[in-house]
Image (cartoon, one colour):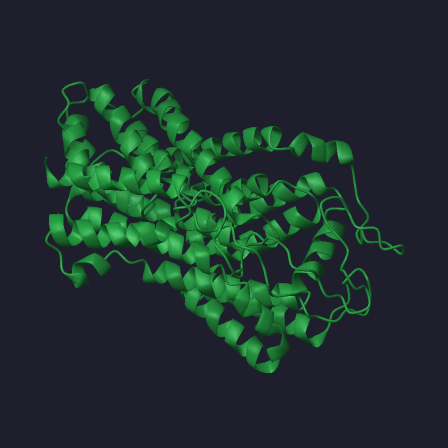
Length: 470
């Protein structure tokens, strides 16, 4: 049995154990990376850790820490009320506003994970407050980011167009952009219909300050346990450990909060600006400017801003530290470290070359789209495109497959699956969701990501490749 096949079988075993036993999948993946890397791939510790996503680790910790502070001091509550006023209380418009916002950010040059890191915590706060499905809101944010992700001036668009030019393939920047935009827009519309969007329209509008003078909470929310102090009871947001084993299927994301929100409110709606909230809003704006205008790292910027706020208002940082999504960090970093081992030992290239050697160009094109989707659900989308587009060159040179359509199909297949909880964007959505059962939300994202992986590559292949576009 080849080392590449062994590494794939071990990955399957990791999934089986994690879904049948109460073990964090990330911990299993670290153990698998050590075993396969040492015994099969003959890698030392440096080779194994080469795949550790240090940048993603800092992004997950920094962004969830910053927004945990924003939650603790009431800034996210203030943003919820402000946004509801902006859309005149029409809750059904909020998911589409978030879709458009992330799409605009990536279209003008933001890296997709940076746009999701900025928007997802706020969007998911809306979801919890107004009874919107977290899966619906998370999917709208991710698909919005990918909808704008291939504009001619975007990061993804520039990279793919550069690869096409380097490989001397025919290219069309507008077709690439529109293919991703239309695909993600259609998926977002389907998700909106299937996961409660029509029900949101039927609800009509809500008051900008939904707690109202009588303190009635909106659908899907609850009032603070002690209205005078504004403290919240513990809730299942999965951000703090609890004695005893974790329940569930072994994703390690279903823990219960032990930290409480200790902010003090002077009104029941939480709509008043305080110095701490003003400073947090400034920090959020600074994060956007630093990432988009100054091209600074989102994770390092977020954790620096969080430290500054914690230094000035330490009472908010105490519950915030407990709300960093540590189980999610372990889960994602472990799985991606194992994927890095697969990359180091050549498993991904081995699979791609095997497909490229098939004598039927249309079938090879379909299989490459599926490989791009499956691998990208666990690894870098750009990295996968950089590997697969050159692999497609031999049969593209035969003239039986249109290069423009094939490149667009590969790009869409490799990025539309980023809603998977193992991808950067999906991990950010999972980590940012407040007051939800994270284990259940993880399973929902994994199931939805699996459906996207199964369906979208075939559809884009049928629409973009079979007609011979380009």
